[in-house]
Amino acid sequence: MQYRTLGRTGLKVSVLSYGASPLGGVFRAVSENDGIEAVHVALNLGVNFIDVSPFYGLTKAETVLGRALKGINRGRYYLATKVGRYGHEMKDFDFSAARVTRSVDESLARLGVDYVDLIQCHDIEFGSLSQVVNETLPALKKVVASGKARFIGITGLPLKVFPTVLEQTNGQVDTILSYCHYSINDTALGEMLPWLEKKGTGVINASPLSMGLLSEAGPPAWHPAPAEVKAACTQAAVLCKARGTDIAKLAVQFAVAEQRIATTLVGTASAENITRNVQAISEPIDRELLSEVQKILAPIHNKTWASGRAENN
Ligand code: NAD
Image 1: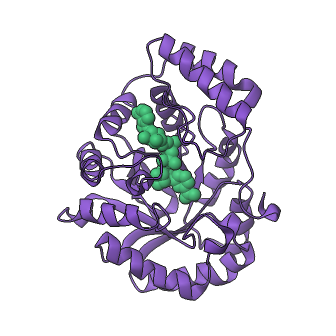
Image 2 (image 1 turned 45 degrees about the vertical axis):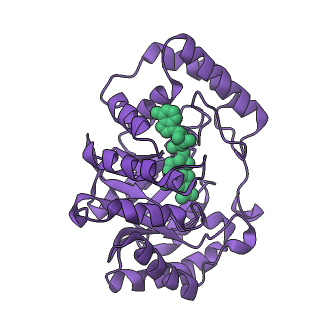
């Protein structure tokens, strides 16, 4: 496993990291024992960064992760969770100081730890960015001062929310977590990387499989991508299969190759998938196949979907 520094936090994170949303049954029903085994296998393979949220499985992912981490030396992993998102509807977001402060305590109890390494405002495009800047982040600063978290991050889908908040906060935000914007079909995050690097902001890239679009099984029914994106990704997966490769392998290799991204979060509750993903990044990428896949995906490259409030897209 290789490790890279997560911006100015100085944390040396594994280039491939563990996304715990599947532990909440986000993609399919998952047995708790399989989920726990997946976490243990990930740690044994050198993965040292784990991301979760109270939103995943409406607290289930944090609870299962807490059980998986029981008895494991706290020094073996960095743990990131989130605040502000508690359900699927607009009404389920709450970035108020009181709610996010309480949320941290609830997460720590479910996870069975005294502190998290990173506390992130979850999907800020659903909230008011001025509330995030003026109320949520100052509340999280107090959480850091109390020792319950070490660093602060923000997460979201529309890339423009990141500069909007970072420019108003003067170094208070240590990391950004972007998803579905650095994978074979969408590399829009790439344009922002030089600016983020200059600022010293740690970059976490999530969903290198574009939440299942770049997999043989295909995306879950709720996947928000437009139909033409789904169709092109299916075509690319079929081509890879015909060439004897799983598109998931190519997708993971592609994302991890970008050095300015400290870590790439792949979600899975399967020990077998984690083992395959870790193996994949130790092998060189098949450039010829990648270029064929990129050709198929060219008509839909960087095609995304709206998320959150209209003004944040
Ligand atoms: P992903 O692109 O990692 O895809 C996950 C899907 O791919 C799952 O169905 C999984 O079973 C499957 N998969 C993984 N490895 C595979 C393999 N080798 N072969 C076949 N299928 C494989 O998407 P994700 O899980 O949404 O993202 C990863 C993590 O990033 C999440 O768990 C979460 O922690 C984080 N995330 C955060 C946000 C946010 O903060 N807003 C958004 C998205 C993701």
